[in-house]
Image (tube, rainbow, N blue to C red):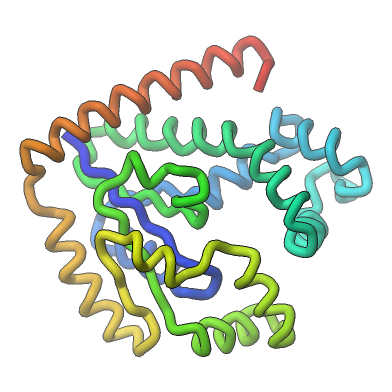
Length: 231
């Protein structure tokens, strides 16, 4: 049996820090950002869709997607951001499911799935519990400005482009408050780790089995589509 822990948060909330803590504790992490990078590599189905939609100007000299330019375009235009998410969502979902399947085959019983758009892509339905890394708004803006070297207005625009972190917090099964020190976060994480490492309840086992069957079906469909060059 397998427990899928959904891990999400907001930009500069410290989700990557918690993801790193899971890895350090020996819990495998499926990182949606890495999957997303892989599905837009030169020549892939995702790459073809982006070039067709955004034109050749979106490419670097080596033919790869100019991710910085694409980011600027979609963060300043909500319609284009939705379009990009719609184009890539099927590729990213199947990529995530494929990584989960490989870990399940290896015998992993607890897997953390690190997905920034966990709620937006409705993937929270496959994960239990959902862990949200939360930070207070003032700290979030300060950290983002420091990390990206951007103005307060630019930071606010990036934050506003996402679902409100307070809403995600209200939907979470577990909240890690990352507004304080790293030691505070580690202390909260230790409790979370204990919780997710406990044996699965009968109800969770049924959910895990149903979820696993869905993952197998989605992955199989993805492989078949890839073979037919439809992806």
